[in-house]
Image (tube, rainbow, N blue to C red; front, side, top):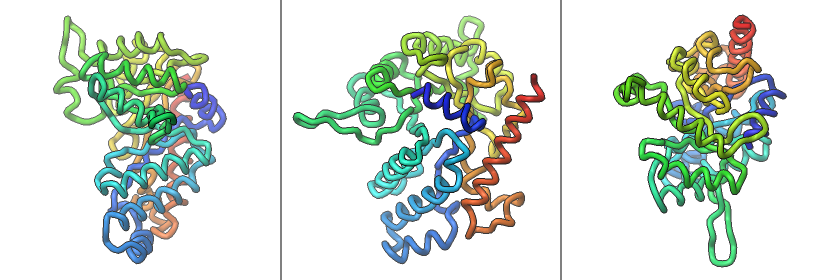
Length: 309
């Protein structure tokens, strides 16, 4: 799957992943009204609004981007109907030939980690048959519990030719409370990055590993260090746009071949119509606003990469 992701990035010239992280206050009133008219102001109604919102955004941007990243918490908050909307979103994105990164941030051990890996990336055995659960192409993994929590995912990835992105240096302000702590003179995130590179050597695609890393755009200098530590790992970069990251902050996340990183933007794209720059589209045309935001983001990243050469 890493080979497909790289190929689609090369084809689209857009190292961008759109975070499908819907909140009800992002969803225009006409979408909510239609869903509530059908299902009432219920969990089912909220889930229907989320699904219709996602579908229109995907329809408007799928030809411009290689991948999407639905954050499962935004669906879990609506209970079982929300999880059904998550699954419908994953399946629809696959129909559009998009790579799906399940932002699930799982981190546990033993049979629990195995069950998470099977449920999101692999197949579960039911009697004499096996079935895919959510069936994403990649999943995000929290490594805090050590290799016991990661290796079950790597095992399933090998079986299914899928991949993971391991949290190394996250974009949130308090990430340094633990991740920047010095161990033998080096910050914890460097030690985690080294281990990501080692795990990745066991599961390589053509040029890059199936074991990637999450490193926030809000820490470009740390990104420069981690790029050297993990030369064959794809880096998923959150924090662009709404969290303050700009194209010029991203150049160190990429390798000299212009590959090696994919940049996430969530509300900066899916709720673009709420921003002054895209207000002219209005809520009725929120999908078109999202499309223009993707075009502008791609130009910003490309301009920064060209300027850095």
